[in-house]
Image (cartoon, rainbow, N blue to C red; front, side, top):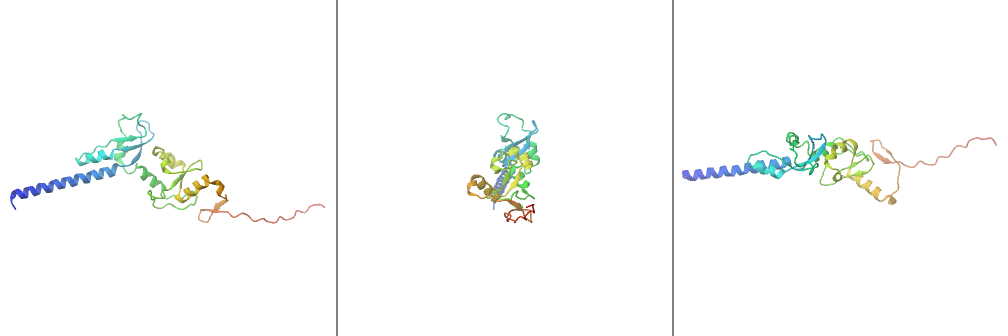
Length: 208
């Protein structure tokens, strides 16, 4: 093989390596910054839901640059021209402030408010768990604004998928259900309470 051929082969290898490296960095950047996050707004010290422009971050990463910007925020459009100082929180802990990571972590070690069954691994693509609010109504996560997560974590209780469906049906079709009293079982779960049998009353002695 001639020297020119070796040089061309080396250049080709370098080009392929550069392309693979750039694509790898782009994919990493996209996966790192995709999804909604909850941060503390530096201006108001209150929580806000934000979304990083992950596509742009991936594009920048191809050229070895590390530059992220928001493309969504729950405080926009009123404060759309802010300095985006909150990005430092995302860069410091991109996974910890991700909405679904926060929610998934909240369920760990908890049990359903109705059946008391402990939560295991959460499958968000199917049979998603729900919530029980202070008003005793159940809700799905799609109904909760992400910026309200800290308050939800404090005031709501976790509900499994089966109990969520059952309670929704109970609320929507009360005429088709027979309401029964419930009590705690040995394991802390709710079990139907059997109606008490009529107990003959002992006659009370009286003056004839």
